[in-house]
Length: 549
Image (cartoon, rainbow, N blue to C red; front, side, top):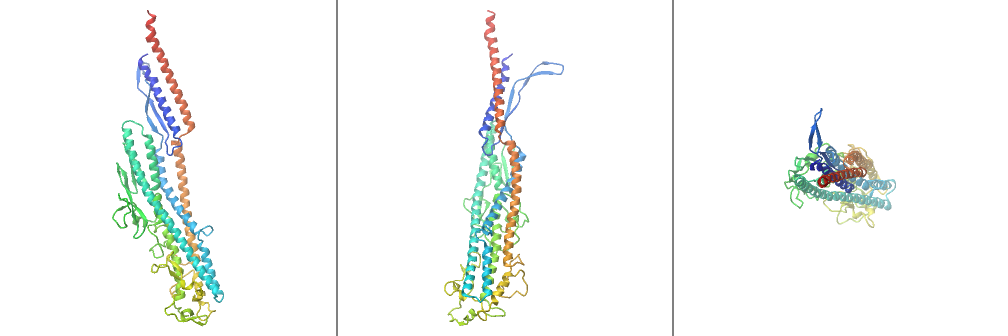
């Protein structure tokens, strides 16, 4: 028996004490977001030879060695989670935009129910055709035309409001990306500083992992840890954080005259003007020509949902088929452009019918100075009798810039609506308008009738007005339904990975209580052994000499 014999129970006491500390730490943080369960690494300490037998040297262990306090974490599950996170957040934003559009246009519970007001306008046109156009039927037609324009303007405002919300969310996302990148860089420095001196930096690692997880929901990232413990991040082909060098994201206006922004690399605090030569985070020209854009985080999805600018029927290429993977000016701009195409076509059809000479019938009687057989006093200036006029002259007929002609409103206004050629019973003009409305094909015979007001929807040939709108709603609903399918698949993958990570890294109260009892028994056993050795040494040192006296 020697004094060195005390090292064995002392090392056991220290190991049990470390185990109790880590177990208590686990229990205290079992509800903390992103906390990773910790374990005390133990191994045998040195041993010494006490002799030999037929097999070889006989050895006695000299105690327990604490090799470190490690996190129970699966690196491959982390990689899998961070690969699935940007896909889930991408589709979550896309579905949110689709559901907002459904709130606007849904025919059952939507805010504006445009199909219903289109039906009312068509019914009012039929009333004009079924009987001699009375003042009442003319007034109804004008009122329903006004309701249609009001609903369209409301839908346009609702879509613009959603774009503004997305634009604000993009600004917030860019700020958050910079905050997370700064936090990860700060955690890198703290972890290296702590661990280079042999200290435990697991709590800092948890904070860094939480920041990386959140960052991966915003943008698609690749994460690598170097030998010193630093995390390097590559995002969208850019070295966002490498070897302590951090890139700063800023904002630039995405189109001339637009308030919409997109992320660029800059240290400027303000929003850069459009056209300034800076490196963009996304290559929009490349994305616009890709058949399928991979889902790469909430930021890209917000920009794709909002678009780079607003759109209308004049936007080149904006009426292409709606593909949930394709940029095509953005989800909401596509809806704006397609709906505006329908509105502009209807406005042009009615305005041309009421103001342009008919190829065979000539001018309506109103435009000849007659009305219901009565001579109308000649006006000093030609009277504008278009059904629709611009709110802001010169800006074109787009949703939100259309109103009923004031000359057709008020007392006597409805009587000015030019519908007849040979008398009050002549409904040929109204009949041709109804034919145009319901025409599902465009024939050469229609070209030139009622001006050039035949129904032509670029990229959507072969639809009547009602058929166009139904197809528009169906395609919009199909896009949202497709996005929901991808969201559900992504959510299923994330749930699986989350559960696997929780099984490995999560804290189980039952398991930790069991560990606490085990370490407490080990601590008591080591303490008892130390007390026993202390008694033995006391006996040998203090009492052996007295016996011989």
